[in-house]
Amino acid sequence: MSDLHKSTAIEVSERIRSGDLSAEEYLYSILERIKRVEGKIHAFVTVAEENALETAREIDGKVRRGDDLGSLAGVVVAVKDNICTRGIRTTCSSRMLENFVPPYDATVIERLKAADAIIIGKTNMDEFAMGSTTETSYFGATHNPWDLSKVPGGSSGGSAAAVIAEETTVALGSDTGGSIRCPASYCSVIGLKPTYGLVSRYGLIAYANSLEQIGPLTRSVEDCALLLSVISGHDSRDSTSVDLPAKDYLKNLPDDMRGIKIGLPREFFGEGIEDAVKDAVLKAIDKLEDLGASCFEISLPMMKYALAAYYIIAMSEASSNLARYDGLRYGYRDENARGSFDEVFSKNRREGFGAEVRRRIILGTYALSAGYFEQYYIKALKIRTLIRRDFERALKDADVIVGPTMPLLPFNLGERIDDPLKLYMCDILTVPANLTGCPAISIPCGFKNGLPVGMQIIGRPFDEDTILKVAYAFEQSTNYHKLRPPI
Ligand code: GLN
Image (tube, rainbow, N blue to C red):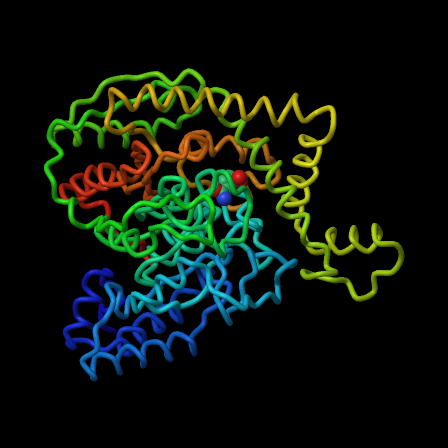
């Protein structure tokens, strides 16, 4: 069997554009790979083989005719199943949307297509992106390719697992409170949550609008920069999209990182962080110092309220966003449901949503209800402002903030799913970037007992260049990103 499926996006697009490799041949190597490993991993909800083959043949036609090709020519992209794809089922891994086929493409999908990428299918996720393990999917859990008994992280677990198992060249995920970075860390890939407003959310099925962004999951920092260059940029269909000129994030990657100032928050290395994680990240930080960074300790005192504020805001927004699924206008409908509107509505939602989604709708509705609104929601917004100020202050002195992505190594499937609070605690180091809007990347930085550890680099708003530069320098001087799971 050839090693074609191991190629990076940069390699694939260069070879296809030069006519040295056909898009169809490359796609077949990926489809082969999916057939071999997908049964063990379950990264996909839908593999859109026919659609993908059609696109590959169109690309090969363009090459033959000598047409101009986009920067992702023939690159295979797996897309999280909460991003709308015209003609391809988009389920949010929920029974509620089991049969939903969007009549339109999300803006990021339009951009991928315009760059001549191939959409290979839709990846598994926690239902409506609510979770950190990809276990709440209506279609069953995804397994961590490094150890099939462990969770792959979540909620974009299918995307991260597909990338490291080489079932795709690259993938897209969404990150509301860590859902790109957590699975990136647990599967040992690169995962970037862009600055809030950098990437259009048009066509992303909303969980918590004020927090989430779509971003890349890749096996190299270069591929991450390439994918970000394609999907970012202003979109008038998303009112929170920022009007900045398009940018080539590959250009500044090789810049010197000497003199970079790195803040290490005390709160990222304190109680609740597993020793194996701490050790690996501290070793990685030594490496960054060798590469010329200057590191110093900082403090983000409001961090201790971040998780509480995040979950109140996220659940409140979720309860409002998910109110539209009543099974009458659209969504799952129990054909036998009879009675009043309330009875039918309740029955459809009880059967269409899983337990975690229902829990969050109920808690969010409670937090927004008259009398509790000020006590919970407004208070959470105030805390959010204070956390933002902590980060603004820290990022005046420091160019980037570095710490672990996850407090724990990947744990067993089933281990935490019955204890929501324990599960929510896993997000402690990722939610601050969503509350503040800052960009943040997770990169592979070590292993313990065959399980990966991710390092998180958080930057100033719209300064993706700097976090990518630090990530690239680290990657180029280490081998972690070259390791592959034994599947
Ligand atoms: N685990 C977090 C949550 O459940 C983050 C999810 C996400 O980023 N979509 O809310």
